[in-house]
Length: 261
Image 1 (cartoon, rainbow, N blue to C red):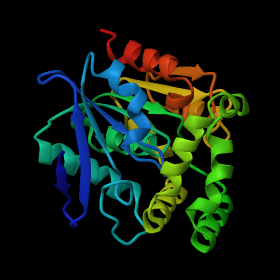
Image 2 (image 1 turned 120 degrees about the vertical axis):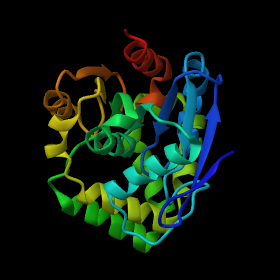
Image 3 (image 1 turned 45 degrees about the vertical axis):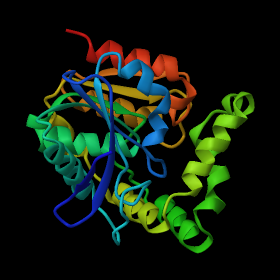
Image 4 (image 1 turned 90 degrees about the vertical axis):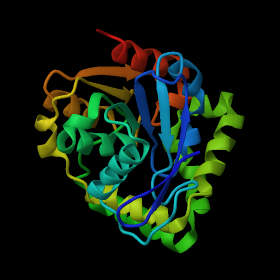
């Protein structure tokens, strides 16, 4: 599987699935997950696309340079991956932090983006204290201490009760995130302000929101949809990781948008 070096020496791990010659769909994960967050989507998405997944710096099999990071830095990592693989243009689907990186790409690298899916995400967090408290807790007690509470934010109560095996898998993935990587990326989320970028995005855009998402609530997703010219909105019966809680509905929403002529 490809390992791509960025301009500052970070190694980004990527994986590619699907038919040669098909248009490329690049997926980008939430904070505290690896590219395996998208395992349920590999089957449906590779029927139509060459699928490119990657571990963000500080996560999974990518290297963990000292933080803090910025959204621009994370966006430039994506461009390094595309350049390293010789890919001119992609469709983009990013959830949570992946949607934040997608907003930067849509505004700052428009020639590299065909269509954008921005899922369960935000353009700005006005209250920095909540992020500061979370990063302080994680720094002092470790990521594993925060993992059970995070599952309550990421999934509805009914899903947690009916799919405990899925919750256990995602919780283990989250708890295994390198501390420095989580803190570095958490600072990038805390400090992000993409509000002024939204009007610059010209790519056709779909915003996907979770009806029960406390991490990136519906109104923040609606704000993004209202400020990107022509953007569409889909609301799923899910909390934050909508692609895991509602895999079929999520795939249908993404493919319906990307395959639309």
